[in-house]
View 1: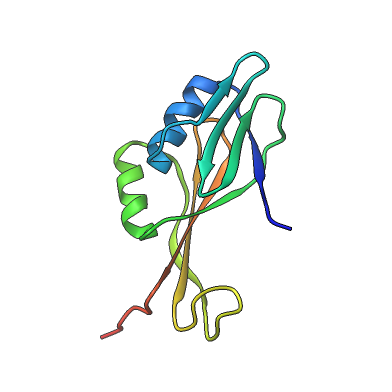
View 2 (view 1 turned 180 degrees about the horizontal axis):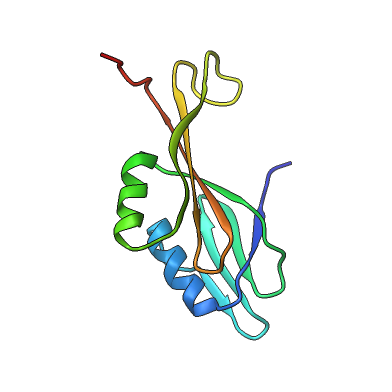
Length: 126
């Protein structure tokens, strides 16, 4: 079994399309309006932005959450929680062993919370 689709609430499909296209760096794969459905392909998993869907928290992997947050702040995206290390992976159970898991949280164009995640080598402390 594998995950095929995740749905997220989007009150305004055009606004959500613009926000997610810029955040994800890809254009939508399909729009059906009516009934109010907007799809993005995330490496084989469909992200459905839908007027009738409940709000959920999406966690998206980015190369470096620290630089991504800086870029989003330049675009006036609301940052709920700044980047911080939340976990050190000592093994490969939840991520590559020997990496630090960084997370930050933002609000999307529709008021939903989105988590941004990076797995990076541990920071060198002087």
